[in-house]
Structures are given as C-alpha cells and as structure tokens.
Length: 224
Image: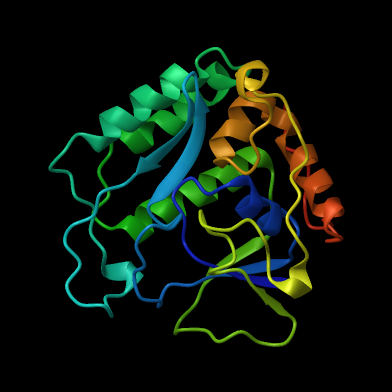
C-alpha cells in the first residue's frame, strides 16, 4: 500500500502509524501552504495538560505559496521555548535521556525552510522508531490515485478520522508520565511515544494499525 502525506513538524502518532503500515510513502512537496496544521505544530503532554508547540514562519505572500518556499521565522526564540517545554514535559519519562541527544540539535541548528526541517525530523524519527518504508517527495502536485491512500488533509489537529477507506484511527494506549492526572491522551507527537516507550514504540504503532485493519508488514524492530 502506498500513502500520500503532507509534511509535518514532529508529526503525531497517527502519521507514523501510517508510515509504519506502508511500503512507500509520498510526501507532498508541491502543495500550497496551509495554516493551523501539523505542518507547523505538534502536541505534547505536560504537567498542565496538552500543549501545542508551533513553528513561526515568515509572512506568507499570497494564498498559493508553496510549502517548499515557506521560511522559518527566528525573530522570537521559539527553539529555546520548544526545547524547554519538552524537557519540562518529558525529563522524567523512561527514555528521555536515551533520545535527548538525538533530538536536541533540532533546537540549536537553524534550517531556513520549514519543509527541510520537517523532512530531517521525520527521517530521524523513522530511524529511531525502526520504520523502513520508502519515503519519496512528489515532483509535482500529486492527485490521489487508485491504490494510494491520501492522508494529506486527513491527519489534522482538527479531526481524528482517516478517509472512509482507511478506517477510523484508534490509538493503542501506552504509558504516559501524566496519565494519572489526565488519563491517556491519544495521538500526540511521536516524541511523546518515543520518550515514554522507547524501543517499544514500534509495537504500539503496529497495534494501532491493527485496530483499523491496516497490515503493518513493512516495519522492523529498532536495535536496543
């Protein structure tokens, strides 16, 4: 099964569940920029509940600006804010120290374009989790085709359902540091799953895929 995804900033569990369940994923590189989506934001769980972290971008000129051309705005110290928020939320999680050195450089180094930052993040997350699906960029705006599951707009902060043919997303529960306070909160950033479950993250993704009938055949367990 092939899937079609948008780019995303530390994408939610649902996004990586899709990646773990396909043989080939196409990331849309020629769509127009859309505000208030996972392209610029992620959701984590801290002591005060769910927190949304957004990447500021420079002013977008015109409604047809391509996602590849969107530049990150470094006027405000958003990298420091994001990293401090992650440390506050996950420093006591079981695997934070194991992965912190891998993740922290994203909050020191400066990428010019949002798309480039997101692709580097997604590639590293796949490596750490153990997802080996082939991930390609579209060379033109890609229309949904037979045999390809289009999730570009389905994976959104505004809705939790996949397209009808993909079934409804149902997240497998896993350990969360603040679950006693808030209960289990599904579909947070992949960082929430990684910091809390470590090498078991792939098992959680595989179990979630089974809930909506997707065969997660294209995955492997990461090395300890």
